[in-house]
Length: 359
Image (cartoon, rainbow, N blue to C red; front, side):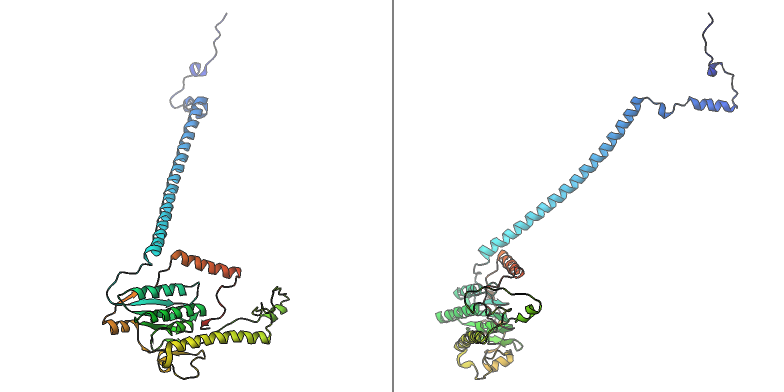
């Protein structure tokens, strides 16, 4: 039996010269293509690539977590700092701001009346009267000075402060003075009238001794718009100030009597406080307002002086101490929020519609 030998062109084929182009082709065929690698090697490369990709992803996640953690720590620290600041401010307002300041020798005790006089505002009777009492009780206080810069406001709050000034004035011989800054009109002048003496700047606005109520008559407007107003009352005059309803002549006369009565209370207290210093000018109680220079000739004020001038005159130097109670920031914020919310909802104000105030 003959040998079963197969012909192999690589060993049995003709010898190729160095310059034969078939030699280069044969050399290239010796290279093993990547696609012929075994399956295990491919799987290993794929696994390593996936691990590298996973490492990069995990690294990115860790970097993002560190960045997020730093921001969280920053905001937590900021929130804690704000909380501590508010807490410290509240503690100071509640326990320290209301304390009478340490004596600095003879001085003028100042109580500020600023803004609209209203039970819900900063210039309310409870706060102003507390400041008056603190200034009055300090033995170092040579005189109590009301520093007024207000267009007026609530008749009731003005009367309460006026009465407290008169009570303190009758309790001893410590003078109570009023100094009007830019404006001391209507209810603010009501308060000043309780002081022993009133001073102002030449250009200050002083006076406006009158009462005002303002509103609108919109009954024709809703008729033109085809709107029906539904108001249910018990008492025929309960809604006589409703701006969407007609006001009868007898109701108008009644309301005018209320204004006249309140005005007379104002006039009587001003006369009590100022006495014979007032002039006989018939326009004095007409609601007009004058400059400080004009008010001097009418007897509404006693002279043109500032607080500094009063201090130098009485003490030889400017030594003043503010006795106005500090405002709790939370109380101020809650009052402001409540006032805005009530206006948005349309709730009526709790204060009197009558005002000792400039229109």
